[in-house]
Image 1 (tube, each protein chain N blue to C red):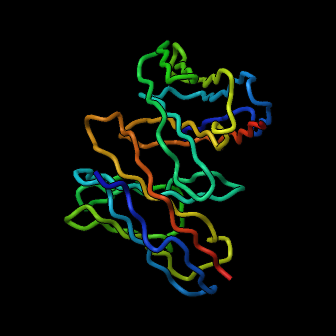
Image 2 (cartoon, chains in turn blue, red):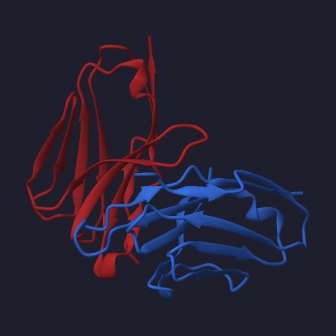
Length: 114
Length: 110
């Protein structure tokens, strides 16, 4: 079974621009969560989507948004990029209900904002 | 807000030594997971512990969940250079929301 895939792997953007990141979960997994990882703040939860609905949300500004499609693929969008948004963005999928919410992570998208 | 504290933050040891990493919280979790992350990769799930007092072994790694389900430890016996990486614990709370610790960076020198 293929793992979680994320595209693109690397991205360089300029302050003020917007960016969209994509995540394809493991086949059969309907929950997708997004995390931001930085050296100073560790792994911070952004949001979780399940069956196309946002089910949980972290403490990030409204510039960070996401959505999930009917095939469980998910996208994350960051508008009006700031230097502090430079981070590794990780997507994780899980098989809700039977797996104790065990999460399987993709390799991440490394975003650099200049 | 549920918080998880991991200690130590950094650990550098020689091959063959034993080590223990701790994950502590004042909150009760329904389950707790340990992950290992290597540079440039996403975290990889090592184990899930669910029952208070539970002990799980994965080759040279031993995981324990505290009786009150608020803390956990990871013990590695005879560490090897391949064990090098960032070890993360994650507590699963209500509605399946996960809280991650800040991680322990382990370096095992040959």
